[in-house]
Image 1 (cartoon, helix red, strand yellow):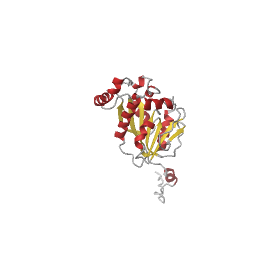
Image 2: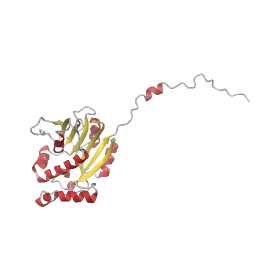
Image 3: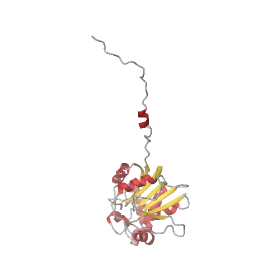
Length: 247
């Protein structure tokens, strides 16, 4: 079940906890992808808060928002780049995206398998996708006061297994949001401390939210094999078949 776009907008843009979460996730993404110069970056779900840093360097930025969630104009004071679409039928040609970001897209999907197939379709060969989901064992998945408390949370193993089944190769992973999901001023003020401590203690594989970067697998084409079988090599043509001699 997708959340309403107004609820998502209010959380990320109008609450201290949402702004803190956005900053932490954006910092981690910039560590994964320090440069996207000349590339096409696509977001799905409610990826708008994470796409803004790419606007000035990417060749093109597209923000896809699923119909059950709803849509909002984005980015402010710039030409609109947000598009309303069906969850598993995106208005993009094959291989359009060099980078793909999913936030509040996979865990709320009614058909995650088909959604991953659509992700793979729009990615260019060798393209990278970043899947951001609530950690099943984290505090953020257990509280419905944030968007990460809705949908289907994942463990790291569950997410990576599902990606491999749909022909993605997980390459890097990280855990973020170690601060409690509370709007109280103490937790917001000490958020950076909890983030540094959590990264150091768990080596970046825990936290309230998981990020997994995966590469689109491209298999060798088998085209031409049936053609070759239809024209077998006649290596032994002209050689007489030996006959059995009577005893």
